[in-house]
Every structure is written in structure tokens, then in C-alpha cells.
Length: 491
Image 1 (cartoon, one colour):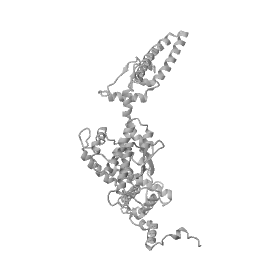
Image 2 (cartoon, rainbow, N blue to C red):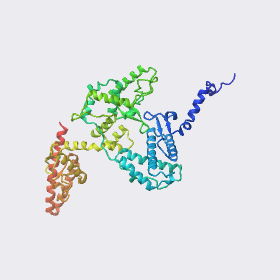
Image 3 (cartoon, helix red, strand yellow):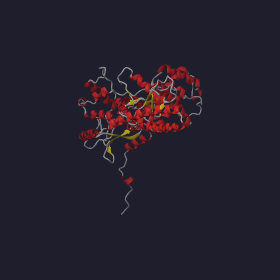
Image 4 (cartoon, rainbow, N blue to C red):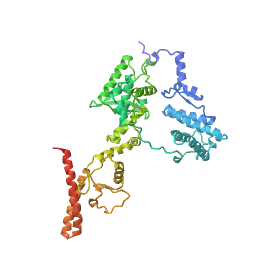
């Protein structure tokens, strides 16, 4: 018997059409590169938001050639189409500036710092205070940096660069969380029942409870729920922004809702669909997810049906990302550690999570209002949290904690006023303390007794008198705080 042919030679013969298709795919970049508009699908790049990248607006042929090379390199390094398009827009803006202001520039070698400063002024006059302002400068600087790194054009002067001081600082903004009054309406079962599409209802629940971005939510795979060794469920998804898989814990109710969605998808696509939320039309294999823009429109219609209004009776604008801001803020204000919040939201850095932690002042204030505070006589210090001086008093406490921290309590003295007690806080009427400092007070009492005993042995009457007052105040403080602890512990 003859030897069996190798597996590769047993394949069906390829047709001319197959060979032509392969050749075209192999040289896709050759077909598209010279065009002024690249069709991303032809390059094998699929992006839900962008179909093409255009270089038509760049007037200079030499600048356009470098912009194309930069874009191709960025695609090859795995950068998304949106980021590549933004960079191309920055180069286009600079090219048009050169045409209007410096038409004599014939290459990178003709650029200098003075010209860049004129461009900075132009961009500032048009886009000051906007995200576009930072983007145009930052992306153009990346363009220059990449040219130098890869040696694409050695004529680029070293002075042609932007410095950190050239790029406007981004203003810190608080998270745009929805108020609890609005969330109560959105989470109301009666309003949730007004969704006329179960897929959109489930998308809303995932946005609310998991804090996913809408682009990640609509592209969830069918098998997005996994369980740990204890049987606890997690939602597994691809964080497209960070280009990595992530997990977020979910409850049994959401798990059951996802299971029900999988059953609905199986009824529509018995052979299986790879995504949890397939597009309803023109989707024979069920592999095309619903567009996030379609959901946004459905969300707007749902809000109108529910007539959601804020505390002032005004209609509320809600976008999918509002739920992510709201979850992050809720977790911080529920005392969830910042590192846990970072992992749940799958932030790349603590700085991003700290954006939500800026609201934790309300959490600290809640603890402060709830804590039992006593002065040196052991008397309770109270403050009406709704009173007219509540905000001012809270601000004073925050400043006192930050600038006059003590090992056994806090100073209630305004920071502008000097202290006449020379750190003898246990004889100071402005001293305030709580039960968290009981161990320090007990240790302080022990040391005070030792000082008094030694002073008695040496006949130091003044030292005895000073510390007797401290000892008496400590006894009052400890007794009051211990009674509070016993009352809270119960029988």
C-alpha cells in the first residue's frame, strides 16, 4: 500500500477566486495605503464606531506621508481605530495651520519652536478649556516623538517639541453620579417593568449593578458568567479600553436574569450565538451584537415613559456611563476600600478610582456625626447635623484633624487661633475625643499616675497639682467612653 498523502495535499483544490481573495488579503495594505481614505474593513480592522480613517484634510504631501506611516504603525501595535483617527485629526489640524500661517514650510526641517508657539496660540484661541485643546497638542507631540524614535525623518529639529507646560492641565471634575432620588425611580420594579425589550432591561441592570461601560456590555459573550470554588458567580467581560478580560462579582438575581437571556437567545438561534445581546435583524449567525447607539435611543425612550425627574421636578438626562459613575460613588460612600472599588471597576490606576474617592468626604462626615464626642469633663459634645452651623463646624473639624492632629483626640480650636495651653490638651477646654482613643487614654492615665507618684516622693507640689487635673479629666473621659461602649455592647 502506498503511503497516505500528507493532510495538506488532501485538501480540496483552491479555485482562482480563492487564490485571488488570499492575494488581496495578503496585500490589503498595498491596496489601501496610497489612498487618502482607508476603509478599515479592507484592512481587516473591525470597529463598531469607525469605518474609515481619512487623510484628505492634510494639505502637504510630505506631512500626509508621515501621518500615514504613523497611522499604519499605530494599527500594527494594536491601537484602536478611534485613537488612530484622533491622532490623524491632530496632524490634519497642524497641516491646515501651516497652509494658512506658514505656507513656505516644505518639510519638518523648516519647523521651529517659534512656529509651535504660534500654533499653541491658535489652538488656545479656538479650543481653550475643551478636551480638544489637550488632544490636538498631545497627539501632535506623540507624532513628533514617534518620528524621532523610529528615525523616519532626521531633519526634524530637536527644538520641535511640546513641553508639559504647553499642554493645559485638565480640570478635576467630580463624578457625574445620579442622585439617590433619581436612582430610586430608575430601580423601581414598576419602572423596570416598562422596558418593552428584555434584552435592554438586562443591559440596564448590568450597567447599574456592575458599572460596565456600554461598549463592553453589549459585546458580552454568551458564557459570561463563571463561578469560583465556593460557587459565587462573577460576570466575565472584555474591558475593551484596557484590552483585557475582567471579572466583577454579581448576585444570584442577576445570574438568573442572564440565564433567562441565554434561553431567549437559544430560542432565536438554536445553533448558538456567541454574544449575549445579538442584533435582532440581519444577523443570521447571531454574532453581531446590538449597537450601543441603539440602546442609548431605547434608554431615552424608557426614561420618557417612566417620567423620571430630579428633586426639583425637572426631567433627568441619563446616559449609560451615568450608572458607572453612580456605582463608583455608592461604593466609596458605603466604605468599600478604594482598592476594592478599583478592582470592581477595573481601573488601570488608583488615580482613576480616586476620582470617586473625592466624594468620600460625605462618608467621613457621617462617621463624625454618628461618633460620640466628649470633652475633657467627659461631657458629650453634640452638633445638629441639619443645623445652620453644621457645614461650618464640619469644615472646622476637617481642618483641625488635618493640621492639629493629636495622639488621643482632636483639637476643636479654630486653626486661625493660637493655642494658650502649650499642648497640655487634657486641660484644654477645646479638646475633643472619642472611644477610638480609649487605649491611648488608659495608657496616658497610667503614665500620669506614675508621674504623680514620683512627684510626691520628691515633694514637687506644682507638678502634682498640674497632673492631678489631667488625671481627673482622664478619669472622667474614660468613664464616659467606657459606659458608651458597654451600652452599645448590650446585655
